Image (cartoon, rainbow, N blue to C red):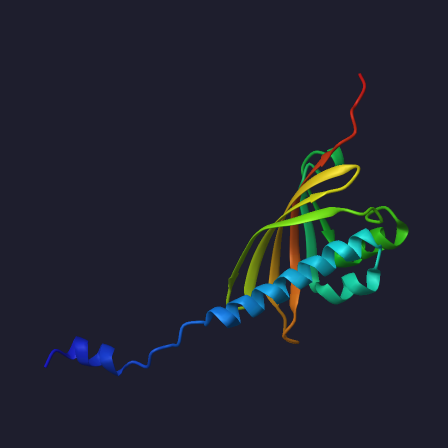
Length: 149
């Protein structure tokens, strides 16, 4: 008897994730992204606090015309929303891609407001409370304002 074949035959097979389960998770991930964008648009700090992981970060390279990397913590982000420094403008959102594997997911968005265009890469985790939470937002922000020289 070929032991390799016998060993392989004896391993329990893991059931593939069903399409229905995958679709349900994608809907939950999509809802977390919608809540994130709407929370920013409406300056809804409570909604944002619910959908952002405790270790959430905004990471940006060249943020608002500055040079270098900018990292904003969850508390800083929520304070900027509260103060009106961020958010408060309605935006149009298009989800370009959702990729989920187990307890992690990545979502690519295109967002447009009257002032800015965004391409946003968002990392999510399935938290201990079984809710999808954003843990990182990596965005490219382009201002629509025309600079006069």
